[in-house]
Length: 297
Image (cartoon, rainbow, N blue to C red; front, side, top):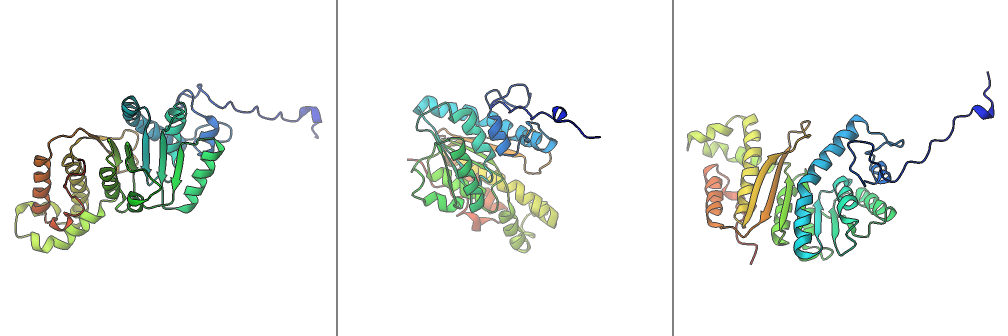
């Protein structure tokens, strides 16, 4: 049976730019932006994967928002660099919820090595008229010396930055005199590889070497000690460091959150402890990675 024209399905009403009736979405959040980020479907719905992704980003936002407010209260504007930005979910949501209403010199820089993701983020920032966002196709190490970034940055984030990028982000933050650093560490394989290489020399020296004698323990201990060394390094540069677990990241083994705030704290004890840990577990050759010379005048 044929349908008459009068029985044709009406076109869906356009979605509002913001919504408050989806409990997971913050008031004032741009629906169109969430759709472009593929967090919301075309008809404004959340599927299971996008709900988890949104929960993760909002959970991080809860930690970062007070840091942004702190800098704005102190300086009147804020700069943030997001390393290993990927598709820039965090950067866009931070800008939409916090930076957009500021209308000042505040700026977000997304650092990402993949050109196609950088280009896509640039297009999105232009589409939504976010002038305070820049995206640079650089590695973290390259960004530390790039003239496209200012000499100092207020907040540095690095979420699951791969390879040596988490440690490069710490180096970046120290050299850019960042007040706040937010890290979800990743890729601690570098320390594990050094432990593995030096295992034969270490086994007879101390019973502690039993902690990483077996290969699976080498990997697990390497991951643990890497984050311990990162925290000690930050403390050795005058930062106050807190470590917590990211709720909602249960699907990932990498759910540790390190937040550091520069307080000009005493440096000698953490620096001494850092050296002692490196010496005890046979990681002396990594002194260059976890350096402790003062980065702040």
